[in-house]
Amino acid sequence: MSFIIFFAAGLAEIGGGYLVWLWLREGKPLWYGIVGGLVLVLYGIIPTLQSFPSFGRVYAAYGGVFIVLAVLWGWLIDKKAPDLYDWLGAAICIVGVSIMLWAPRN
Image (cartoon, rainbow, N blue to C red):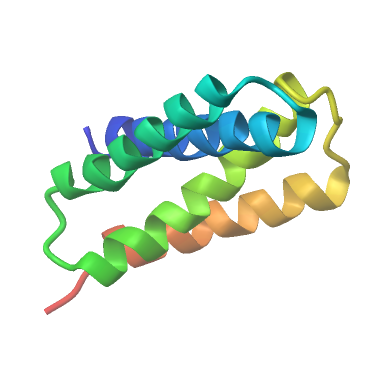
């Protein structure tokens, strides 16, 4: 379940930010920015659904998931193919996320 929440938060952050980007940088209509802003508010709510007790740990781990999703977004939506170093960096982030969230603690 935690992966689904991270995934939903990532899509909301990237999607909302992308709509704002299109409005401000690509000259799209104002409603792109408004919808993007609303989606970004939703992004702020979604991570609170995580069952992990620590805000900092949840957001730090989410950062790693966000990196992977951003690389995929750039590839699939923006048509910018990631290179070996993009994939390597994303893989390292996922290893870090896994350690942060699921390492045995006392």
